[in-house]
Image 1 (cartoon, rainbow, N blue to C red):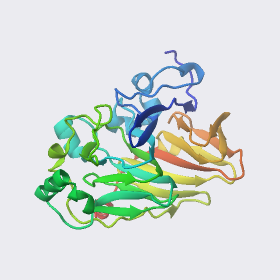
Image 2 (cartoon, one colour):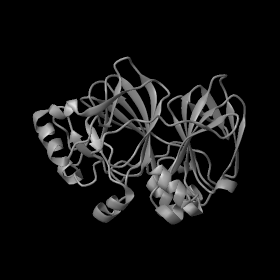
Image 3 (cartoon, one colour):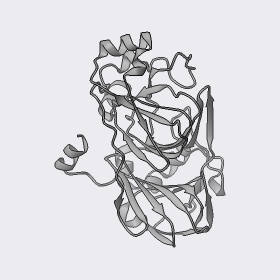
Image 4 (cartoon, helix red, strand yellow):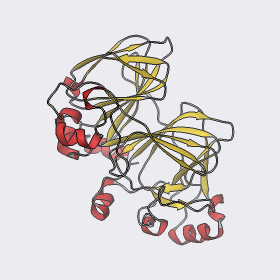
Length: 322
């Protein structure tokens, strides 16, 4: 690859279909799922190839120092039409020790939810490993899941150890660390394909990091950052904001030293001459200093994902873990 100035990068979508619905990877750097860029002089290069060459120019010095050559965040859309297999993921410490990989902090934003839509977020009551395995064998575990009714625009942090899934007709935007470590807990009697879950990532292997306590689901509470920006989640791994784009907004990576991802929830916007339409994503390399985002439709909203470069205080970290 030649040494040219970087620019806003559009990414090809990767799609997987299953019996319960489909997943569309908007950006991924997982080896077996590696997004290709689709415009400009970097077109047809994968995100991993671009990271190998441009490294901190893509993600920023602080993010690169933490994550190295792997792009640290993945974004996908989940379209559930039935019963999505219930899953769980480990934290960074367990993932690094056991699999030499990142853990999988997740954020779910509800893009659309029909009347029958429910999320599974943990358990209604405290259980233990034995009752979990017995319940899976008998299917009685279905009565123990904590079913949460949701609506369009709701968002949730899916912490490591929290069993989770979806039922009914629902479309979810998922932001997570770049990790393949989803362990299948329960598949509703359906056979799970190797394409969806590695057979080694099963419930027995996850028993020591599952959260068996009763869960009370908490919607992420928006925190106003500016007139157009609300922070939805701010954790050690990434930051997620929602931008209600009523007028032009200036983005300065020079101050934050990180990449930025923009997913268009609805409407249409332009970023340095690149149009961003509903359901599409653009990656802004950290090298781009001042960028103007302009709405092309009166009603436009974006999800912004930033790499985390600010270490939290011990008190903040303690409160976050509660």
